[in-house]
Length: 401
Image (spheres, rainbow, N blue to C red):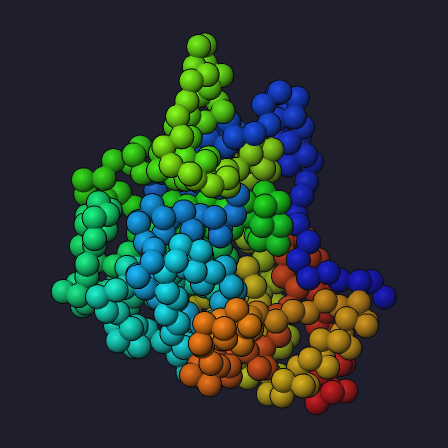
């Protein structure tokens, strides 16, 4: 029986040709190809500027640093996400304030959001889980209702906003839409991932895009990201190649998380054919919905009157115990089918328990997790292989349940 992996990358000769072209160019670190990819992302997301970095994690952390968020500040995040959504808050020295999901929902409980905002709150990191965009209307309603509590400190961007910043962890969300608007058009800052398992990959990589803010020059903001990502150096490698331009300064002890032209070459080729890749994913989701409808107790809703997801993950819930869920995953793996779980709620993890968080305070998130199974979903998955996934799962489900 054929082994079906969970999420292999979709790499064609187009990607290989782009990478080879960069290798032959003699310029392989951050340079013209990265700039080309950034320009393509701007057009695709309908934004004015984008900056490509080494990961979505780096993109979120640098966004917090650009906003001057640090010790003594609080940032709100959902309890149902991967650690990157919260770890970046810890990296900058701020406190993560976690909110439970709404009942029977993978999204945070928006009704609790306003109550979590206080004078220390500087931002919220909203997570577009599985490709479904958050309800940003409700998020901004909560944020705007608490403007009177907001203290921007001396950060000029926060002063321009006049409220806490809304940051989208849209690691899963490139190309997803809500009410016809693509990810990148809702939050103040939106961060994408191009990791190997994402819909669009640069092997490792990510990007941040942002809205235009009153009184804030976009070139200035782009420069801030570049400074943070290149040791605080006031010239990148490409600028230093200009005649007599070796001289540079280090403005502050920064970090190292730039994207290379090799990575960007993958992204350029992927983005050119991205819409076709998403169209196939949509068909796979429709087939899963139909085939599993009689077994499901819940699932991520990729398409409704408001949402048009990029179908990054197929999260499904079944009327089973956590022990049965784990047994099903093991038995399917023994028969060549790789299933997954997205995600263990953050308060279940040692790092966040050590911060004093308890899963007992997040009962809805735990309920979503304990019977969730994520199915293979990728743009090279054939219908024939998907049928093998479905049939094997049903056989094992009947055996276990």
